Length: 340
Image (cartoon, rainbow, N blue to C red; front, side, top):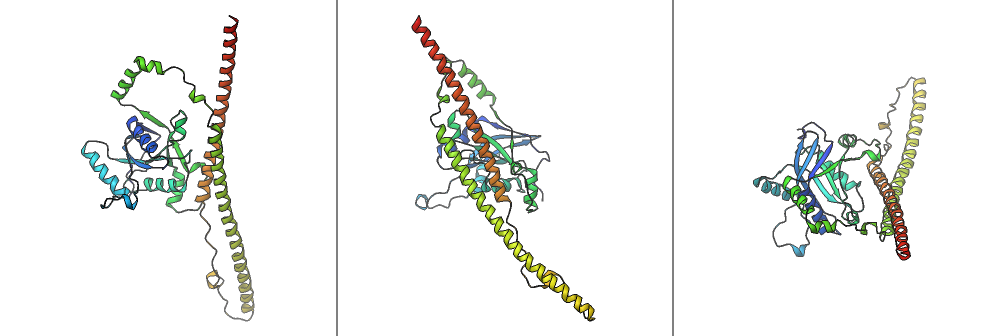
């Protein structure tokens, strides 16, 4: 059995605005808990169209249960898709969404969950993960992105290979476009023509505020420091493995040299030679190397954090330059008015 796929790899993702609003509301209402859900839509040509989103149920405490058996995530998803099919809503699962914390994208849990979607026999290989950041979105810009596992990483996972892959090639980002259906576009256009909306279009300088900039920078550095500690722990595993391999290999070499010497003496005496295969030595084999995926995923997230710190610092510098120019313009205007 092969994956259900149209055979074409998608190059972009289109999501309806209603689905985006449902994702935003679910993630914002659930803070500080990070939540997830599944996406429904169609895979057409080289584009993935997401038309609907549904939240996944959160596990409840024993005291909150009402005596009925709760449906698990898979059963809930199947039942919800059946109900949506009855009301003529797209019920084809095309991926999942989750809330992320300050751009935390490349983690082992996310990679494993996305691999379960892209490797499923019932789903398409074009399934994507939509990541929404409810914290960074409060700064005046919607932070929502679409990702999927790269083909190179999928091949390594399928073959259970422990080969090296560049951390930046584990997840690949796809262009994400938000689409409004006809009557919603018309409604927004009508709102733009109302006097109340025109009053709201006046310049608002709250987005230029740098009140919490230090807090975000410190949090980024704290997250980056924690990841570096995890990376050091992974390096220690490789160092221990290297020492173990070196010790075992030395034992193998000593046994092999001794067996070769014994075979040379047996050959001179006209006796049978003993096998030189290491399986006959009784020594323990070389230990299995640690998986490379964990440190590579950590390095991928370190790269993400570094990029976000650079973007945050650049944005802060631009705000600082803009506010300084506004202050100087205000001083000039006040001085001119006082002269008059």
